[in-house]
Image: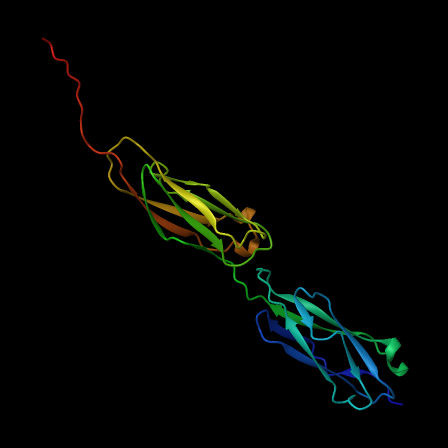
Length: 239
């Protein structure tokens, strides 16, 4: 009787997270006398799954084989690419005994991440009185695997300040809008309208590494003067 073995498996399958399912084929190289059951398992179902956990190869379909779908799991995290082993093994209890000696096999699914790190602002410019307040929001475009810290600074704290000056965004609240308040700095000087620039910077040391390369973003703020020029005097009338 011919020596049983398996064939038809590629070494590596590349799939994008948001891509359509792909498939591979399992077939035998020799005809069995009875059914052969091959169990299939993904080593990491959070990254890639298979369409079935087993296939049956019979004396009739042994050489045409059975197709199995492979699906890259589309998550929301910026987690880079992953190599996921797909494991195949003969189910000894349900298979032709001649195939029990066939060693387990595996191949890799390379899942390519389709999530890009980034953050967006709901405003690119603001206006505020030196005695007033206004707001803007920060939103991440995808989920980080760990915290992302964004520092916010004012080019002139004598005219406008921000609160908070640092926003920490976590894997749990990444989809929330994070509000920052901009307050004009009141003075008693008639100094007219002032231009202030807010700078938003990812804190590399405290943030998920995937977000470190992000460019700074700027918000232009126009601060209007609340002081009105004038004078006053005191007087006393004598009879």
